[in-house]
Length: 261
Image (tube, rainbow, N blue to C red; front, side, top):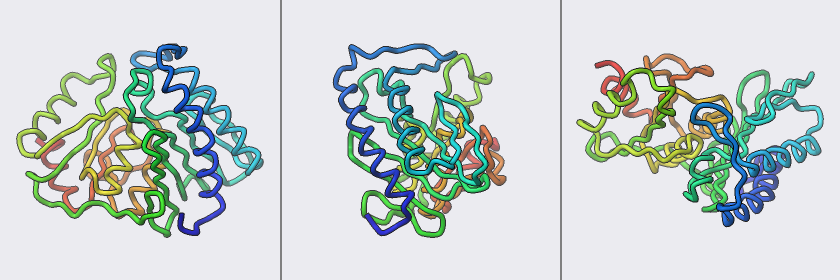
């Protein structure tokens, strides 16, 4: 890995450690203990176990930092720093044996994300970035795609649980996109969608139902890779439900297609 801050080294070691647990449990899917958190939301014993270990390791390394985590909630501190943790982003994929999910951890300083890592344990891919120092996939610098032609693009989207749908909004967006854009995909892991746009595997993505921990690490990685993030109106993004990301070159054009018709 490039020589970055001690925080990135901490995240790499923690992700490497817990990925072994995730891979082991993924190999025994039929034995998973699954519970329902709410409409369309599930949590496995692995989520809870991995989050507990991540928090313990982070507190050993940086005992003064606060944190907010998907399962444990928020632990406030007097420090200006706070970790944002999603132990397994893509839990539905994980519990169905689909090998597409990731660990996502970001670091805030005074409410601004300054670094983050998304770790795909199945592919052994670590995406990470620090403010002002670029974005990386393992030891390789990454950039968003340079594609501009609609008939060459791949767009990603997240579809909320049916019970959370607002009329036909998402379906109307997908329909408008499919008419003009090469391909749309729903992979089931927002953090990896951010990573894929950041490294040029996809060109844009959109959602209207994300939690903060779903995208915190992805946001800094995307921005450091040259991407753009706004709400659906193209306005500045700050912890909003409406999330649209792109390679920057086609941001306004895709916004017009999906959201302004």
